[in-house]
Image 1: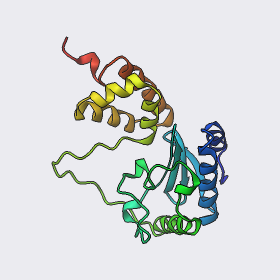
Image 2 (image 1 turned 180 degrees about the vertical axis):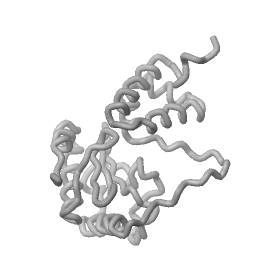
Image 3 (image 1 turned 90 degrees about the horizontal axis):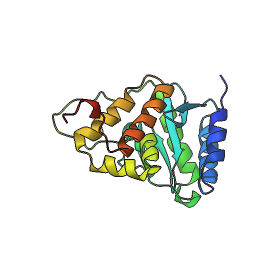
Image 4 (image 1 turned 90 degrees about the vertical axis):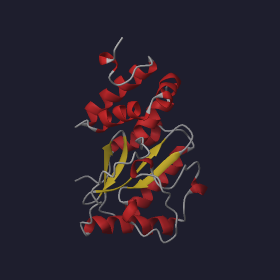
Length: 203
């Protein structure tokens, strides 16, 4: 299978000027750490696979993100990973190359993530404790909201359950095409101040 993906070339080219060198550098480090890694397009941003998902990167209006799929299982010897979810990235907001760890450090982390996949290590299954957890908003959803002030305001004012309904609806999409269509619809509805199930709301 082809190791590079032309969609990622286009993604980087269309990113903000500050983001281009960051994304290019991250991409190069991933391939340096694992020459067998394969690029792919998932949830509207670049992912890197080797016997499963290894890591991903994304660009936004004012920052970039980079995250490991199995960050919770990594040793994090240099303590560079935040407590964020896999979907949100663990290196914090990356606004310039200076915000990245040293190349050798990041390559070592990528190699560790690859090794977890080589060994077939799985993420633990999620158990329902009954407690309401903080809702994790996927990067592609955050990016879409950032592009529409009214939709973003509506979402922020939603109750936890209303927010969760949209997040789960997008997450349940079986294909990227379906997810993209749902995302466009979600932004349109929220721009009009509507909840996910507005059609069934009592008038």
